[in-house]
Amino acid sequence: MWFFFLCLLCLFVQKGIAKMGLAQMNLNAANLQLACDWFHDVVADHLKGQLRQDEEGQIGSLNLWSEESGLAKFIAIHQPDYEEFVVLMLALIPNLKPGFFHKIIAEHLPEGGDFPEFGGVQGASHRGLLATGETAQCILAGEDIKKRIAVQRMLSSGHWFSKKRILWLEPVREGEPPMSGRLILDPEIAERLTTGTVSKPRFSIDFPAEHLETEMEWDDLVLQPSTLRQIREIENWIKHSDTLLREWGMKKRIKPGYRALFHGPPGTGKTLTATLLGKYTGKDVYRIDLSQVVSKYIGETEKNLSGLFHKAENKEWILFFDEADALFGKRTDIRDAHDKYANQETAYLLQRIEGYDGLVILATNQRGNMDDAFTRRFQAIVHFPMPRPEERYHIWSKAFPPQIEIGKEIDWRQIAARFELAGAGIMNVTHHCALEALADQSRSLDIKRLEAAIMREYSKEGKVV
Image 1 (cartoon, rainbow, N blue to C red):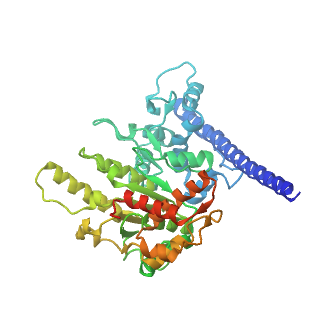
Image 2 (cartoon, one colour; image 1 turned 120 degrees about the vertical axis):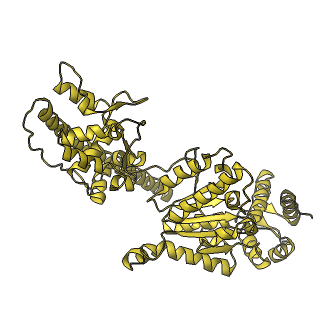
Image 3 (cartoon, helix red, strand yellow; image 1 turned 180 degrees about the horizontal axis):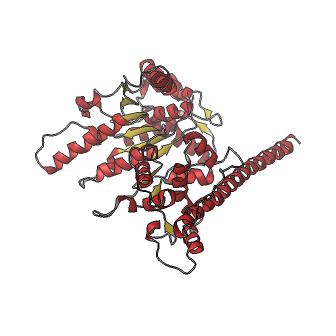
């Protein structure tokens, strides 16, 4: 009976969550429809004034249904003025109504005809018209040179649109007017405005990073006290850096961001520590394998890294660079062009890391492989040594699930003292033994099975037994 009520409760909760999601979608759709209708009136009114020499009317203000939609939240955070919001809608409208510009021009030029002042370009896949800087000038300024220059300034690199990577002008071919470039709305901003949320980026050539998550807790991570103390210092920075820099006025004296180097043998907890830091501070953690990012082709490494950092800006992500010595190894003398560009790639990454306002962690198995000139740039250098017998005992004692019966002849302190394994190696042994116990339906672990699994792990790691 209790089980029935529990299932019923779960069903109601799931339905409630689904309804909340549907309600959020309806709010987004309702507000976007209001914005589209308002924007249609704005564009139509400006076109009347230019094509028919009519006096422009008074367009009412945009009143949204709810403050909880993606569009309303964007307005509340950034507080765009009228001109800025019109430009934002010019870039957003093709995502909502592909034929918007063709239809509205047809309304005012029913017999057809050319209207070069309106600007706009055709996309490669999108069959509608895409707005350009000239479109923004046409709608907001007409032939008023002073107002047209004001729109041009709005689309420059100094405006908050560009600084916050919300909206910018696409570069054009040499010799063409810069304002003929199309308006580019950041895909994440477009997604947030339309759906109210932003999905996490997937690993790809353009985004060579993997999102890290874990169900483990701090209690599951066994570290030496000195290592754990330094990790707590990093956690303190994540939690209190905003107060330190802004409320306490230290922003002008301290560089933004925090840089840490994790070094130690494989399997000692470097990746798990970075993941737990994100989990307990509410930050997304992305692992970048520099051995996969570094390219033999000149300029490709910088291109790969540039896209990654652009994506991470203003997100407060924790960036975890694994195999850091692939790019931060000891610098070589310049013997050929390849050496020269390898050093340039390293300098570029260092520059981007120092300019990043979040936490950057570089990890390496051998600190000796890292150039001392680079390590001086880090606020923290954290050593992850092989666990000592006492730490190994704590890992072994809680490694196996309670469903497995541990043989009486197994003494975890003895096992910990006899076999030097890192935490990851111990978990590999646990995984292997648990699967064997399930396969033969014994659900038990004896010393013979355990030692055989440990020897198997030793063999994998190339250790001499």
